[in-house]
Length: 266
Image (cartoon, rainbow, N blue to C red; front, side):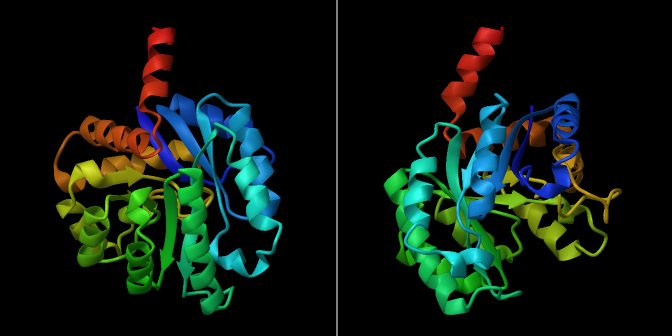
């Protein structure tokens, strides 16, 4: 089993060939996909995709880029949509101090609010952190985000941050950037991290792994990330696939559901 824990299938990049993309993922051994709607215009589409494909689930929230757009309607709409059983996490939420498309003070305020909402909804959180490592950690700790747990998506921090996140009960999600030639320090960190704390993701359509770098990414390519982690740790591909899949099912609380499906399909 392979699982792509984070993609954006609702984006226009997949409008023309979504069914083919999902089929290619299946043929590549990717059993479950998680599509992430990050702003209001994408939430219903992400949920539609998840609802029409048994092995696709949705994650909904407001990306830090879009936090300036949050108004009195936003959280009630999200709360209602998140009642759907195909929604298994809240996100991606957090801080992006690289592009600063929303003012930093607004990002911080909305990050705290959305952690609180995720707690009300009893959903794990999917965290976006870019150039805001210490601020992200401080907020996760002060808001006691470990109560719901979750994922540090597309991890870009250092060893110390990884350890602190793992100590909080968060999983570290590894994207295709681990395959890049200039990712030596990142690769060395991944080599040391415990396998039972790792997930894999594509962040499709972004961050395609080598040898597809620069092209549109898609869930079928998550196996290249798995292979790179296996190479770095000098363990079989199957070990990484099994562990990261089990971790994903655990954090999204789908273990029993998948077990039941497997038994029915026999």
